[in-house]
Image (cartoon, rainbow, N blue to C red; front, side, top):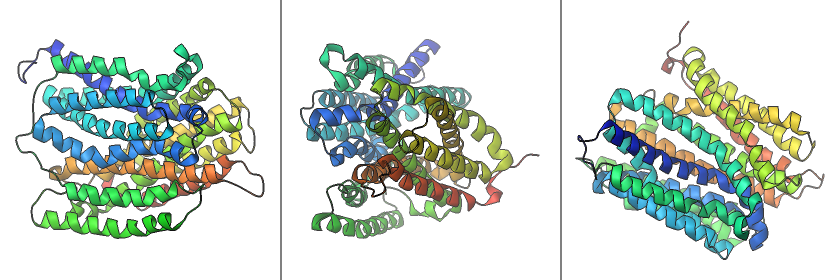
Length: 468
């Protein structure tokens, strides 16, 4: 294995390719599964709760262990934990593909999310090791481009694999295809990644993770039970969520006061732009994840489209998102400030509503739906591309890493929440007026996007560096 400081340009580039392969593996697996949900549900006879947990379970376990994954790399070495995460992710993918029941698939998806949370933070840490600051900017831009393309490719690849039905494996191929990719990343990582760890590892806050994890589960589990109806257990779990959040907050505040490792520093939330950025992150991620779940399921269940057509129809959304992030957010934010986020949220609200209503209620043709999908993606990109720079605008350098990790965690938790909320409304929808469930799901998605707009409008103008 190469040591830091002895890497040639060729070794650096091979290491970069290794990290990109792992990032693609994670992003594709997050987006590919939506296309397969109707096929999985039909194969297992799975109910709404299992379908939601197949998607939300990944996001939830990823979110809860993301900060721990970063600290494991600091303590035990980035290369070692990267290889451990890739190996675990690959084995979990095999378990998904070989699952015999919906419950086994949910358990394997939880394991996928947990191992992905160990793998993912090491990629950015190793970028620090591999490249100097000027090179790092260019390489991170490449990461962003590849990540955007991977998010578009995921649903399309899922549709192609399910339609192809190679060896009669059907939807199982979307997980089993990770095996050769994961093995490639393992071999490449072993040979090309340098062995480094932090000189001052931050330590762990296992009780904090347990408290917040229990609180999130207490909130999400009842939401996924909406179709079956709530009994005493669901109400009890929901009642426990708020006290657990309060206990978790007191715990981390006490750890910080004692100068001990904490899950996060509550002082960050005293910074208004960061606090609003966290709120926007949660609401936006919930709306986006809820929209993508509803969109993929409704196309097949309400319009009878094939998985391949469903995957291809994700492309205009993904293209719009890339343009929104790369062009609108970057170029317009310094000039127009918070109004870029407000306009992006408003555009996504209107266009996403048109898409979901067009699938079921209005039965719009594809030439009408495709521009609406493009506009949804543009709004999504304009909003999401601005959240990070706005949120950390007044965060000091000493807290930059913790703030970024907390925002990413909030986004993953928001995604799990959005899948639970929008999925519950979609699957439990029984409207006397005969409106299709995709219309009902948009009531949740539209409310979440409206919250994004409201929070964005409260951002202080002084954090923006306006030009001309």
